[in-house]
Length: 99
Image (cartoon, rainbow, N blue to C red; front, side):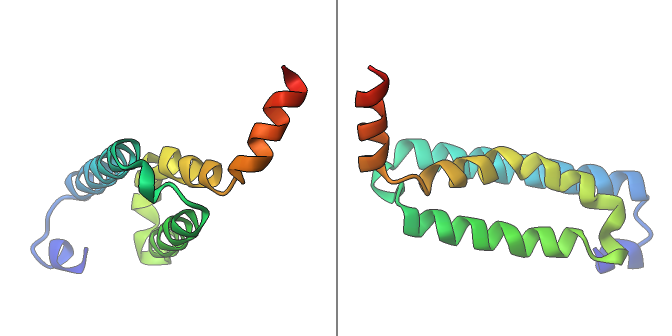
């Protein structure tokens, strides 16, 4: 971000860059989760949530406030990580109760 400011890249271009980067990051990570079921574990969900938290902290800094809307692109990944926290055995038991 600082380098883009140094070279006087227009803010709207920088904002679009961050939106595109976060959207592509979300798509890549989500596709990777879908294609690799062995990594769909609660411990990996914790790692994903932690890393997304670091990105959230960066976007919420005062100098990056203009780009915080870009973080919304990562919301689906955040929700996918929450689903991974669910204990599969509990989910199976709940399915038996509902069925």
